[in-house]
Image (cartoon, rainbow, N blue to C red; front, side):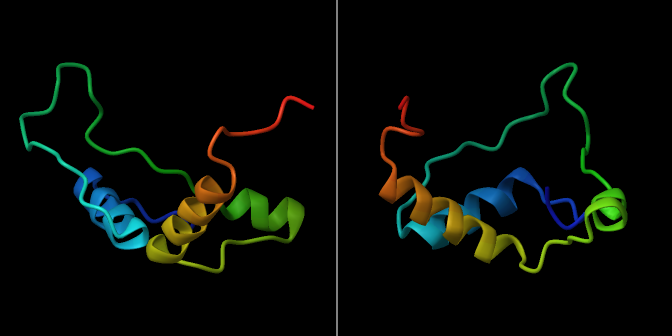
Length: 79
């Protein structure tokens, strides 16, 4: 669950490069047939029902994701 702000694929790549300190190779091409132009959710229901809302933006979210991945290189434990 995020902030309700949509980000482009390029913005995601750049944020993950910044968080990881690694270059992510990519190639800009035309959108594939069937790909949606944009997709994002309105987080208002989570705030209303759970009293929770995201406090951080894209850079902090990617930093947290990268930190988790480094601490859990094989993903979730099966135990």
